[in-house]
Image 1 (cartoon, rainbow, N blue to C red):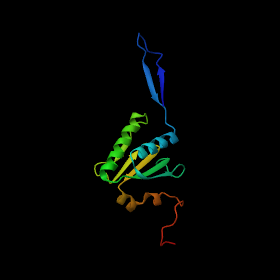
Image 2 (cartoon, rainbow, N blue to C red):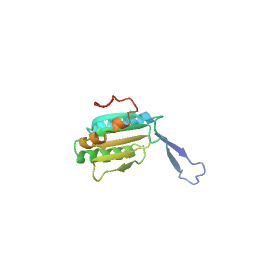
Image 3 (tube, rainbow, N blue to C red):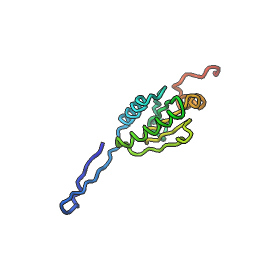
Image 4 (cartoon, one colour):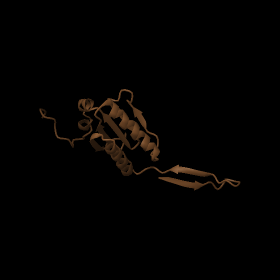
Length: 139
């Protein structure tokens, strides 16, 4: 994940080291996010492949928590773990209310919902790109 590089221009007894973060593999990042969501007991985890379909991200992950407290906890812990494991800082939106929290991790966008809010917005259907079955009652 990290690459150490010794600065040849450094003088004196101490050698300066520059640490560069390598861009994480998309699949590795997705696996990390999914594993963390599973560890934190997120429910109904769905992954939508957006590669080549949208410029916002390569993957969208949608999951539910049982309450606003669990949604907030999952989001905060995921953001913290991503940073601790070298995936960089992430952006969080919606944390104060925690009905719907958006976590932007670059190549992956994670939506965490309370179940009622998730069913209302139905992002899985909106982003299905024709892959989802038609809704009952429509032709």
